Image (cartoon, rainbow, N blue to C red; front, side):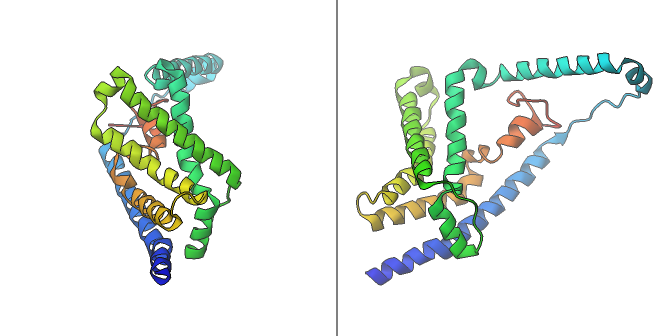
Length: 233
């Protein structure tokens, strides 16, 4: 039994981890290429106005700055930060913690170092434990919001609930494993399996909006972008 546990754990920690990273990388590249092919570069008007700029530079700069500020305000009105600032801040914190907590976790970087010889700087364990608790609390908040707020419940599908539960599963199982709740072997198996499956399927699900947030909000010009981008659909 001990041998079987050690052998399977070694597979998940070694080949399983590497396979998940390779699949994620391939999927990320595929989605990035697909995104580039689905958009086109915005052509800027190339007006030969050297004389105007030379004689009216201060006024042109002020006008350009006002236009940028006005465009930014207009874009922000289409975001959740304008319609529901509290929800926008909670969502932003949730997405930030969703990324930095597993990436800079001590245990994960130890495994990465043992497997690949490469690791990232780590955050204090107490801090990542606090981040995990915060993520679980926000996950409960998002779930309760979908269940108890009628206007949110009406537009929620079974897929929305499954995605939320699947996102939270690695953090809940990791928290249980770290604090040795329940049967450690079962919990650590579940944590590693769910985590590696999540890494592999991330580029192929709606969760891909997280790593592509920069492109969708800052690089592609649309009704959801925060600033005018240099590409459009």
